[in-house]
Every structure is written in structure tokens, then in C-alpha cells.
Length: 388
View 1 (cartoon, one colour):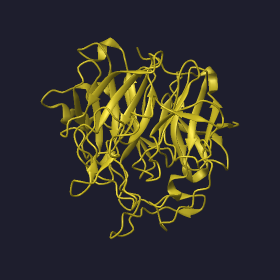
View 2 (spheres, helix red, strand yellow):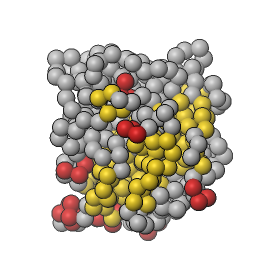
View 3 (tube, rainbow, N blue to C red):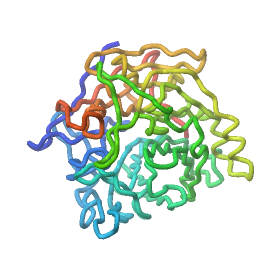
View 4 (cartoon, rainbow, N blue to C red):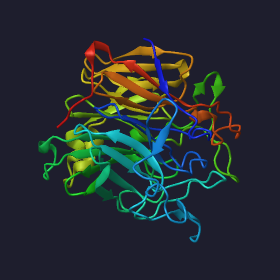
């Protein structure tokens, strides 16, 4: 399978910002985000629309990307994420839902110049929906501190808009919490009521493996915490990539500090009864190893796409027979961060060299710009899943 280089750019003469997510609308509009928590240099803006192969524009406006006083509140001790519900603080994911709306997942966290990821404060962690026909916000859902803890890291999100899955009839979103400092788990939110809840908090399947050490481009990958702390294994990176089965009945997720793919019936995650957590934990299934990966994605044929950092590849897991196959392999791939299957039948994915940032041993910035966005044709005429 051949990869096609789509774009990534130096922007308006500046070195390109560090990209994470990718979202592609039914009309071909492309959006990305630049997590302030993963790179302290991502201060200019945190969401943009890619308007050509070499340019992008701040999205939906420069104002909402520029919280007054900055993304970090230095008047608290320790410094904390700004608590503005109407501004982007530290966006980690951008996703187009089945109704062709853009959703923006904000962690509420940002990194200091020294690389310390500050805790969030209420008003910072949120989910924002944007109508692409008018480029205006139609909904903002704030996560309370009992759901998005101060050290949570709301990482990636998938949507099921079928009326039958929630009492409100407006659909549900599933979110991974990949926190490197706190409790990992899966967060659900009713898109009609705005209510949110958690399941699988700190169960072994949402946490990284103890002593986990991956190798990328022949380089060992150890985490390098902020100043004053010691080098650690990558085993502090919890539930990250997330994908829904094509029928919406199974949720898949992956932990960066592991090679295993896990799944659970979504019915168990939607349940909020007294014994729902016990039933959820009993329903987790290991689907076997799929390689070291970050993001996940599904196509209409039910294939689950996953990165495979150690083999410079993108793999696919087929739930129909439980096997993993290499979908595409290219020496230019290494840390495939986020995936998005679009209605044009292509899967798009970002390559951002995360393991070469200062957050990883030996603590120097070894990234080689520009960052890139690839795409490849989905096999078997696969396209975007349409759960509505």
C-alpha cells in the first residue's frame, strides 16, 4: 500500500507547529490541532484549518485560540490551566462526527516552558461542537472535576449519534483519559444533556504495562519527566487511541505503553446502574497484540486501523477473524499519532515524531521538520462509519 503525502507546512514563514489530530469533513475541509500540553512552543494557536498544502488559518478565530493572559494561570501555586470555558486552553483532539460537525476536545492543560504539564481547573476541560456551515459554536459541554480530574488528560473521542443509545436521543461520545500522572479510564458524555460519567477507572487494561520499553527507528524510548524527576519507562501513558466498531456495539482502545488492543461492549459503558462498573470490568476483552500505537480508527468494513511504530507501519485488525495484518509500511512513518477515515474513502494520519521531543530521553529536541500528513485509500471501498 502506498502512502500519499498530503501536506504539512511552515505557516506564514514560521516553523510549523507540532501537530496531533486530523479531521476531514465530507466537503474535504481539513482541520488539525496543536496540543499546548505536548509542546510548549504551541502557543500561537491550538486549532487550525489546513487551507492548502503550505498554509493554514487559525480556526474558528484567533480570539478563541487566545485566552486572556495565556493558557496558564501563573497566579496559582502551582500554576494551573486557565479556567476559561469560552477559550481553547490545550486542545488534544479534533473529530468530525457523522453529521459532519467538528468537535474539539480540550484537556484544559498546557505545558510551561520547562515542560511541566500544569493541572486543569474547572472550565478548562470541555467538548466544543462547531457547525461547519457557519463556522460557529453550537454547543459547549464542560466536564466537572469529578470526571475530568485536575491531572486527567482527555485524549481522543468517537461519536455514536444513533437516537437509541441515550435517553436524550442526541447520541453519545466516548473519550479516553490517558493521564500520565493520574487515573486512566473511559469517559462517556450524553450529547443531549451534557452529563458525563466514567468507567474502568485505573483497571489494568486502561493503564500502561509496568516496565514497558518500545523502540522506534532503532532508538529506545524512555520518558523524561520534568526537571527534578528521574527517567522512567513509557509505562505511564494510559488509554489513548479509541475506535468504535462499524455497528457501534463495541469500543476498542489502545494504551501507548502496551502492544495490546482491548475492547468492551458499548452497552456496558452506557450503563450507569449500581453494578455497572463491576459488569464493565468483567466485560473487557483482550484482542491480542497489534504493535505499539497511538491513535485508532475504523472504516465502514469494520477494520480497525492502528499504528505500528516499531515496524514503521500502519496495521489493521479485523474483528471478523481476530487477525492483525500490515496495511501499509513506509520508512517515513514512525509515530503515527491520529487517524481519520473520511467520506472520500481515504484514511488520513499524522506523523509528528513525538518520541523525539524533549519529553523523552535524552531530553533534547531531535525532531526534523516539517511534520507531515499522509493518506492512503481504504481497502474494499471502505469509507467513514455513519452512526446516526
